[in-house]
Image (cartoon, rainbow, N blue to C red; front, side):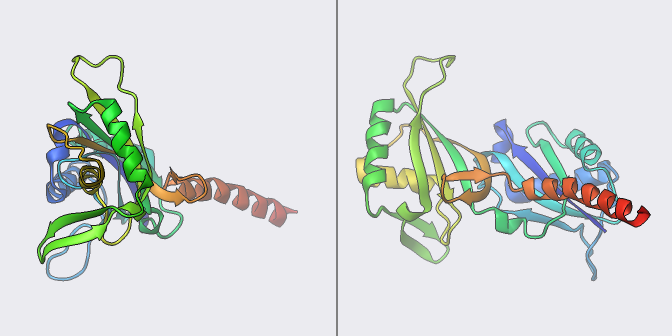
Length: 254
């Protein structure tokens, strides 16, 4: 059995697809691409696909991850191309590696998010970000199936700052762009929780819903506050193995 790890995106209108919608589309793509999938046992076998930390419905993403199990070995890049061609535009498979190391989910400890706030003056956003960053606690509320839950969103936010607006915007309306790095904690702190926090500490209330995109997710480097590529350990292991095999062969021949 071979395991392949994939990174895929949710772009444009496809950001409104739910996780279940994507599952159905991906399973159709597996059949269309004739991928030799391994199946679970039992009365209702299903393809062995493991999804990790999917983005909420309505948010875009450049960094969604999953793992598939195959019954026959395949070249990861060729498999990526086949699957990408079998999915609708916007659901794009952009990276693939053979799983060489365990624990993909354990490497997804933080996310980098971009929030586009149309109608918000950048100076107003800067003021709100400063208030959020200096606050010791930022209590927000979220409706759950068990009722309203109140929690502190501040500790999960590693980094929050404003970014300059692109010069090629087709409108003269103000727009503030926020970038934030958020730890994956329990309860999960989502971008909309951070917006609620900005409203609580600085009365920042965008006139239209924010356009939210996950730019990256992976292992948080506590020293730098950056998020590293979760597939890098598998690439490094794949590079090291041929070297080790060649050294072993040279030693045996000697």
